[in-house]
Image (cartoon, helix red, strand yellow):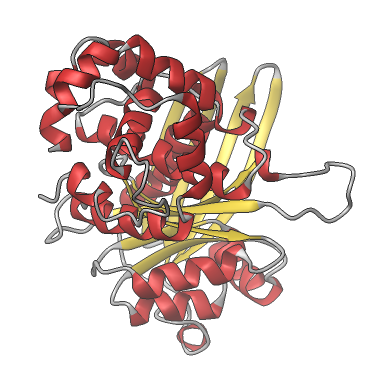
Length: 363
């Protein structure tokens, strides 16, 4: 296994050799350790280094005996090329695919870095979006890509990430934004599969799904009841065989899927129908589990970055620094997931004064 330290040593150092007290990998590692323990922002990370100076000096064999300062941390985050750091992350993270010989379901979605929005009053904003490929099975992010919305789009970035993804026989789950023929073609060409949501703006496709679900007998059906958070929702998933004429127009569609959600949210009745297409022929139970599992990318990645790691509440006043922090936050989350933690707050409590347990993942 390629260690994190080995990976960080590959990040290009933008600094001049003269006057360097700390190699770049060491500064980046200290930032990651600080992020894992809830320190967010330049000054907070500088405090983390000072508060844990003795432990860091001994563990990292720092000579002369001085940890990186707040200003060093700030300079590094402003200066490191985020594209290079992203490439290094993807090389390191790809090894954590659950089992390359087994099929995983990988959720793909983009997250806006809100702190890169400069003026909320402007009608058309320019901001950075990070697209993540998130393993439903392990909770690990396997790949990242980033873009500015004025220069590219999430659709094109996802297609590019799929084309360069090294694993095969995986299943990508995507929301309706990515219900595009070019996206399904890219997935099939990469020797992978897809399950994609469909919305009404895809009129021909949506009407085909409606017609088939209303006039055909489903191949398989699954029903579950979810009682949690003050609500009771019944989910019924139906799988249909798509008509032969339809398969000629889209890439490798093997299943039409209809999901009906109904019940109560608080005192209000709730009823919703969603449609999906897939290049797989699976049971309704499998599709039900994985369609629901797709939203783990929101609950176990985006929400954690926003609420626990405070990613959107830190203003670094620099697009590159903000992107670098988001990448290093993802490194921190991956380390916690590899250790088996589902709750990040619990993981942070466990980590305090237990760095020796973490070190096996770093070296």
